[in-house]
Length: 105
Image (cartoon, rainbow, N blue to C red; front, top):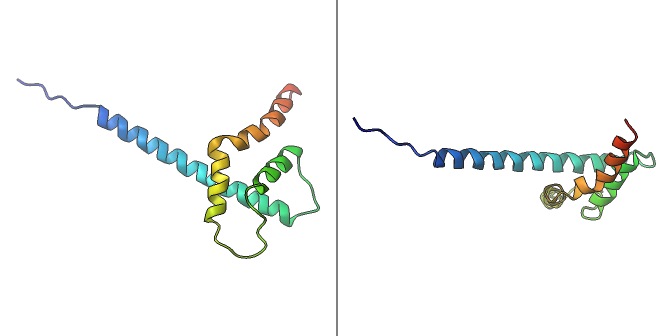
């Protein structure tokens, strides 16, 4: 009787590749949501929100201008996606989150 050997390497590779695709899709969705939230902040001015969200808004607006007329938004999504995937957005709010945890909220 001969034993059949199936390599788990290909299965592991596919699972890992599928996982990274999921992460990419989630990051893209987060970038789109951040872009939409920034636009809503612009439309609701002069109202203000929390300092953390105002800081994120300012960070995004350094890369993406306000929508004041129709345009292709793919470059804008890509710019915010870079901020998300590089961790820049997390770095922007990290200080505010640490203050929140220190205060016991």
